[in-house]
Image (tube, rainbow, N blue to C red; front, side, top):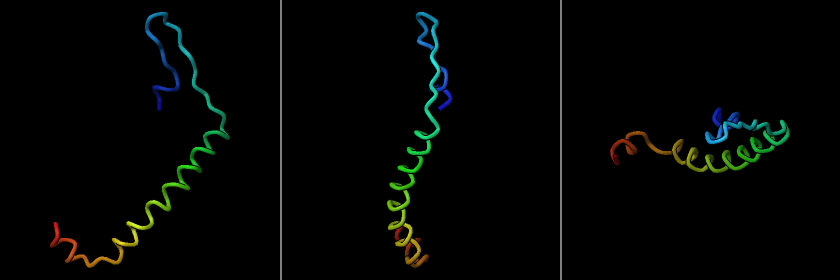
Length: 59
């Protein structure tokens, strides 16, 4: 992420600042949460119901 904040192309020495609006950052974070939480619920529920000794025996 830090590399995106200030980047140089090397040839001309010019640099540009990457400064997205705070609302865009919040929107991207919310989309990530909206996708990540439901995607993680099913495996988490399955792992919570699994017998520990059975899980160890299968590995």
